[in-house]
Length: 251
Image: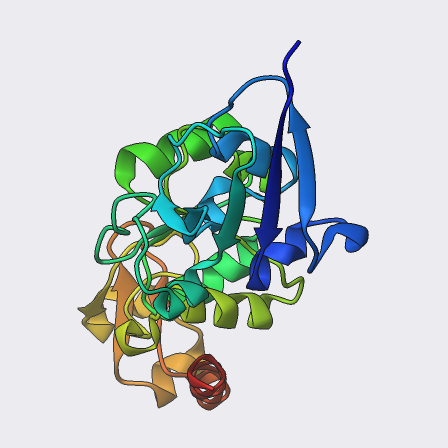
């Protein structure tokens, strides 16, 4: 059997996916056949969705490039491609406006994204094949902490959420997709993702508590699930939350 030797070096946030002893160092891989460059990279633990650019022997390639003996591979995350003199896009551009589908473990992140106005599908019973299908068919960015799911061949646009705290998660998503300018709060239902529409107080009067009827004149209602919203005592706290998230995303 003829073996080929290929070296890999990973930069920036891609090293998050490597074992500690392989970070920030040259990795030598022995392979029995000339695989497409995508496969050994994912075998090392890095989902293809996290890759912004690949150079082989300092030349830009895409995922279909088949490795040869002696090749030197350099892989860069999205936030580093602007530093390269040239690179080859690895996937089509993310569809605009950016929309999301989140896995079962990211319910609070989904609610925050909806609060900020972003179309975000979420159900706690979606399984992995369903998530991959929705992402592929609807052009949605798949949000997950499961790197194995992001290696699914149908997933084109995806992001591995490293943070565990939901506030830091939403900041990381806004930064990754440069969405600070697209924030449109109080526009989407945090419960079901439907759009909010103004509704006459008289039409929902029977659904309001006495104090709410007395103190608040303006209301919105979800056009999908019927949830009613108003700028109650919690509104200033929510507005401060949105401001903090935006400031953090722009830092």
